[in-house]
Length: 309
Image (cartoon, rainbow, N blue to C red):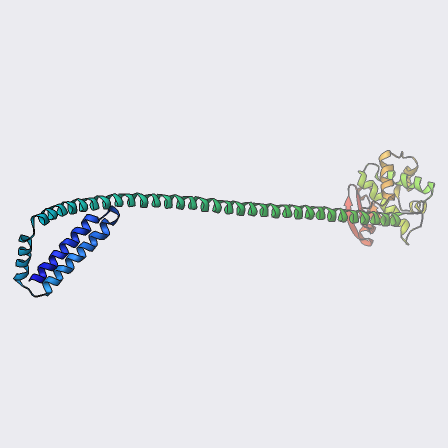
């Protein structure tokens, strides 16, 4: 009993001394120590098995405390009360300060996060812009290459067309020369004049093609082995042309159109299909027409004449 009272008194004086010497910076730590000490004391008291005697001992201890000590207890209680209030105020103040610090940190972190997001967005935009520029440049290069290829293809097409036209013109000139060579018939000035007059007398009232066809037949006969080898010989062969028989070959007047048609025939313009004979059916006797129809091959007719081979 006395031992418990003595222990509690010692604990009280220890607590008092702690409270008297506590500072603001140690409020919380020493308050925790005091609480743990009291809890420990109660635990020891409970485990000692004193029963109701413990309570009585506390009562006796409280009654036997000198007046000076009671005054000290009051003073300690007052100091303790003030200290707890100060601790609560300090804790509140520290909590608010901590909240402000945390808030500042959060704001700073949010600001840094937003700035990082903005920077990342700008970097992404820059990358996308660079990609777009590269793609645009690539498309421009491809378009330029395609245009150059199209230009080269067009130039090649034109070159091939010009080459084909040149070759066609050369071929045409060769054919024209061959045709002229084949059509070329040795003739004297007399032969030429005879050819003009027979064409005028036989086809002077026909169109240009009709006159050329008559000249073609005369020239075909000169080139054929079946007839004389000169224009004069062919025209004046017996019983071949009616203008020779009736003398109109000597009285006709050769026109400029006839001269042009004869010149064209001499240069090789030929529509005769190799014809060696022609006949005006309406101006021929029935005997002549029967001979044409039975002995010759009909080719075609033009204007007033029918042509045979």
